[in-house]
Length: 109
Image (cartoon, rainbow, N blue to C red; front, side):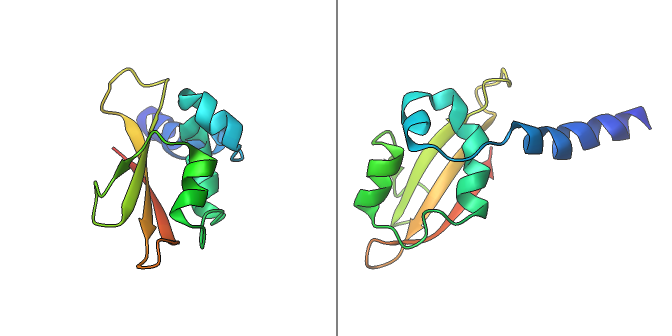
């Protein structure tokens, strides 16, 4: 029972409490805060329809392209509370043929 409660707290409650609203300045200047904003960006579809240049203006130029598939932009959002370098979010932005955001996906690695 204790293990179940710890799992619920860590898996459901903790991410909700640690989430925060997207702020472009904070995203760019404080990489450790990104993981708190990825849910807001994904859930509220704040980037849908924006161009690649608008995305770079909002999220900065520390990204990789075509990492997941062609026409994608990927921003790494590490969780500073996890000690393993492998635990991080990859915020993947999928662009359509017109270089506009089609969808985004927050991937926990």
